[in-house]
Length: 444
Ligand SMILES: Nc1ncnc2c1ncn2[C@@H]1O[C@H](COP(=O)(O)OP(=O)(O)OP(=O)(O)O)[C@@H](O)[C@H]1O
Image 1: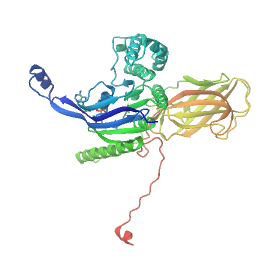
Image 2: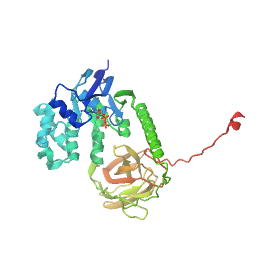
Image 3: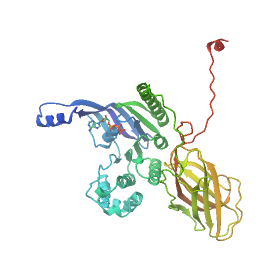
């Protein structure tokens, strides 16, 4: 079957008027026959064909034209030249606030927006609980949105945009807003829409997110397509360009500071108690609960057994889990998994997989398990899911699942100032050997 085309752009360019001084704009209003502006081409000669069901990342440095491109596809801006053809119902999450009436309540805005997106009154009523459940803003749904925090605003806007079952979903950086739980929920929803063959266009500066969500990507550079290819290749080129750019900047900086020789690293100044803004959230959202066991506690401790929520990368940490078994079991196991802010599972294990036997437990037995490990992760927030089951077999498999509590703990990993400089998910702590061969040696 021939693949359907969702979006076609033919030689699209966008020109904005710019004024050197604000007064020039005013002068032009007062003297309409004079032109005080200069022309600025934010997009130049963009031609693309996006197939139905593709997920496309749009990346590029600040000002490269990403938002302008999204707005032209979403129809909120018109191209100066070229033509755009969009085939399907578009739901767009662009600038914060666009599409919402500040004086309307959240509820009214949901109906208003969903109507604009082509849903009937009945369809919106059917979807309303799902949208509000997703946004999770409580009683604020009946308050005017002008009273919302920016986080609440994005929650509601995102909830509407993704739950109206769009054929084409356009998102501009919205995933960067909101707490880790909401971000994970958004990623899960986008993964679901992707499975349902929704065409997704996604602007982000977060390359992990682009990598996770997108098949292909567009790299914009000064309003032109620099590369349109597999996401991995485009991200690689973007990162190489970024490194080159940063290198250039730092060369200029070091020339400027050549008289300042004091450029050494500072010693490790981050303390365990500093910057604690994470919290143990307990059984926040139960993904599975058989009613046969429950989590009594899930705590992160440092090596001195003090409860912590901020951990310096590469330090030892203990995860202390208490499970109360409400029935007797002959061979229970307890485990955990760690996920990053995109919901990506980084690690999981359990007592069975570690060849540790809890042994049979009678009704109302509390079992405490302590996992101790190093945390060589990149700085950021992570969540821990705690689970229990009976009779393990193979990898994360068992005869009877008892509970799985997502987001039992939230932890924040902070940078280890004494470590090497590195980037990625896990510090592989590489060793390195360098050898130099002089000319004489090479001739031999
Ligand atoms: N209404 C406008 N009038 C004049 N110039 C504009 C207008 N909108 C955008 N621009 C300019 O067009 C260029 C591209 O802007 P755009 O917002 O599309 O970039 P971007 O890649 O999304 O940037 P960022 O990553 O910072 O969000 C920028 O130089 C911007 O200043």
